[in-house]
Length: 256
Ligand SMILES: Nc1ncnc2c1ncn2[C@@H]1O[C@H](COP(=O)(O)OP(=O)(O)OP(=O)(O)O)[C@@H](O)[C@H]1O
Ligand SMILES: [Mg+2]
Image (cartoon, rainbow, N blue to C red; front, side, top):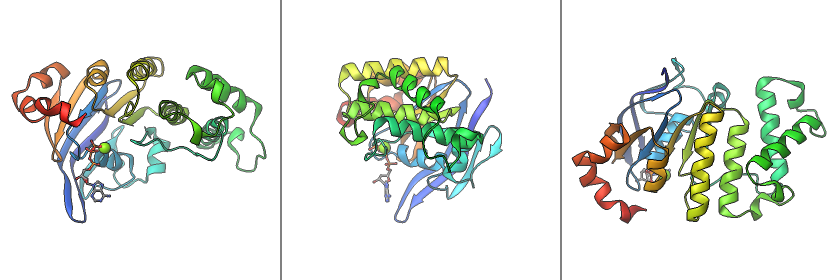
């Protein structure tokens, strides 16, 4: 498996707080890499630095062998890096269907096809049809005309995943994709994510607190503690690591 993303010596600090210290991490194509760590460990901050929402204060980020450290978030999206958020980000005043249409049109703009032209007054028939197919795949067809604001938490997360994947990323970063979901929704979400990884050839980087989700999805596991990586590797080996057990697994119930 070749390296899709390489993080070399990344540091990050907010004005009064050092958050990431010398982060070195490799994400290989096709893997499902889960990052765990206590609240405030720096997981979301790392995602922001990798997606270009914030810039590292030192070190470099390579994607497909190229240094993307200085690229803005939208430029990284164009390269194939997608990301969802701990709190779903949707156009809440728009309908579910319009959210999907806008995402599909953005993809067409990235591909520079006529379906994505800014001057279109109404979406192309093919785009509307594809939106319906995708909504059916995600079990959201019943919600097409609802405002995104009125969806349940689980449906909002599902819609956000659909929108992110509509841009056809190669690497997708999911920040706590099952947070706040009921157990049955959580299981369904794991299945969807696993299925997508296989059917769409996706590489996953995700953060998660729920251990059922972690061990249901992870092919690699990294533990972040106070902004430092304290273990990274095979999930079962990391689970047995004495330092990880002491710092994290012993307390995991308290963080969930
Ligand atoms: N915008 C900000 N300004 C200043 N400090 C921040 C900011 N955002 C986060 N922090 C701090 O940086 C540290 C890391 O936060 P981060 O959100 O990356 O942690 P996390 O691992 O994602 O936590 P959680 O598991 O709760 O989501 C925390 O101490 C947090 O309070
Ligand atoms: Mg977070």
